[in-house]
Length: 422
Image 1 (cartoon, one colour):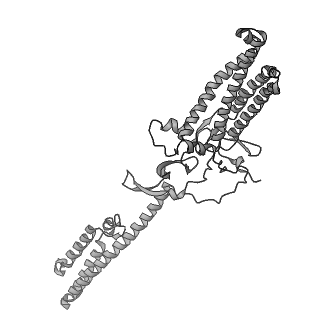
Image 2: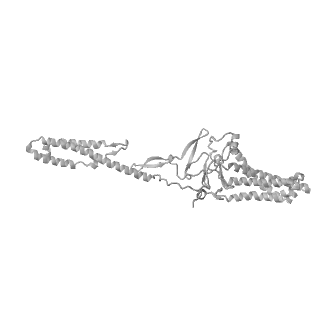
Image 3: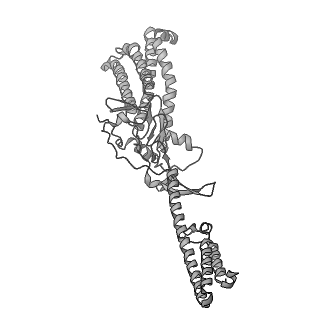
């Protein structure tokens, strides 16, 4: 049976509803975030907002307090799910490295001075962003060059576009496709904390006015208001500070990752388009569609021939070298035979010029000389000095070999039959 993409996904994500929802590996922490929102709002509606329904008789304003709390809480929960349950901008990983980036180089070996071929791969390359060069890195896990502002999340094991950070409270990476919803979630949670804190304070004021009591007596009459005010005050420091920090990041067009990593380097921010344009880029642009179709059927790729390893390339180069040496030996032997043939012809011509009375005797001597000439040369010793184009890449016989051969033939050509006879 054919499998779908989400079933063979190599990241650390969890999928629900047949790949329609994608969560991070720490999706269980999302339950904690839901409880931290739902439980306080439920306490607020039951012990505070319910008692304020009839305190504002005109236009039934008391019911509006309860309705606003419920609606606003649903709004926050929807933003939380939009942040946590969608693709944050995952870059699909490659099944093999980009072959056009490989380059073959030879490195000298320590033993024997041999050259060993090896595959070199550039770890970085430069791209132009807004007229400025930006260096992008190669990801070994995803086997691709990361787009600008992309980073590999070690928790989700994915490369994420415009990676901001991995938020454990939402159990998902924050990137290009969910950053807008993340900021709205954080800022809405801050407004919800302010709303609950303010209504609890209002309820204490109502108790003081109705009972003509002091603040302490009013607090004793509504302990839930005290707990909610303390909880909202503490939470406000967290979500309020986070909202302010991300307002600064949006205004300067930075990400959390860039701010913490490159702050000390004083880099020029090539992505800054001005405060207004930066806000419009985050909130007024269309969310890019996902690069991944998690419900698609997996297409089987044709097997690709494996890239040659260093050992295989070295063996192949050694076989070529041996073939070249054998050709070199054969060529050197041919040169030696040609040189010997000329010397033999000279000796035979000199023998014929002698008298007929010593023809047979000198012929036998010439044959002995020829026999010694055929046995004398050591081809293997001469051939060792030949080489196959170590520098020029062409056939070349070492000069000392040729010189030695010429000296041998010249000495033999000057030997007279009389000396040979003696």
